[in-house]
Image 1: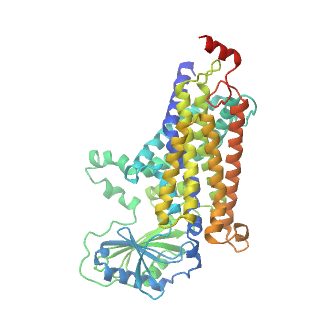
Image 2: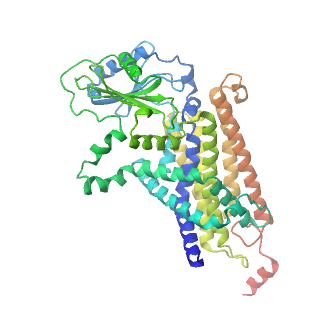
Image 3: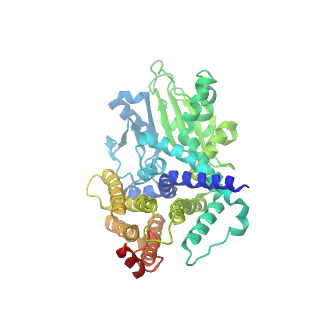
Length: 520
């Protein structure tokens, strides 16, 4: 490859990585945690685990009570069936949630916590407003794919020679470069899948828009609709007709899709002859995609469509499989932990990429380092370490908040994140790095203590009670606390004893250089 071409690819890889890196760090760090979405739901609301699971027979009384109190809900609502993670059946309509209390009376409920949902929102918006943040992150994922492609072209010639090279020593830049390259190459299939699936899931509608109006004359959705959704909702309810009891409809759906475990019921135009039920759940088959659906007429009980992996069209199979790969909805705990490790490694990839950019622009003959390097160091510390500290704060607010827990969880994240960014720009990079890493270590170490205080259960004893999730959260939090503490000490040591010609240095200038400055 010509040197000019190689330089072009290096430039593309560097600048695309810098532009996308901050959002991708947040997306990967938060995404690694949300791999355990269902398990963490029990950690955030432990009181729900002691509630008896709502029987299926109570589903129809809940629907009837909501429709009687709120007739407009008949147009569209959905029911989350009871599960081990959430043992109470919940009906959701117009951003409101309803349940039946122990006496069978309808009550509107507010979520006791949104810890997992908030961190999941960070994953697909990077903390930006939800209305447009998802599209920004979709564009970032396209850039992410470009950075991956250019990185492969750059390092392919030395792939096998440098794959397992990790030269630890005084050459900091080479050590970071080896770690960056090894993680990038070894996890390349994982990153390619995420770049592709994230762009499709976030920008799918926008990418289809030109075809909708320029080629298919506004009928593209009619063509691909059956591949995207189980069925189109009916536009009119039709003549008045009662609903078939939910338990009976589910029994019919189970006969149509044997082995399917239903989790969500979506009702449209309830109370009319055209009433529709879309019953979603999982079915265990020898395929990557496990999501399935059965569509029924909710007033007659007639099965209108069955969507199981064996009946998927090529388009549906592609879309569902891509979603399953993205969310790790297969393979159980082994795959979940693999995704968690790869997700955290991905976050490190973007963090180390910024550090490499700073090192590459370091001047080794003067203490006055480029302003661009200092600003990049401060931005990297503020955003990346601010995200880490903010996420730990969300876990702490879940157990320590004095009132409205979801509000305090959100406030806690953004408050700590913005304070970390401000602190990073107010302090020298080496000082800010040490102080913010110590903050991350302290907040992470406090998570098990907050759980103990909030729940009254010693995490060390949780395993004896069968609560492996509490033990897992405590162990991971302590492991990460130790890692951040060790990194903080390493940063401080480098600042005090390392090369003075660096934005990470805390050393005074050599006597000769100080004398020269005074003479000048």
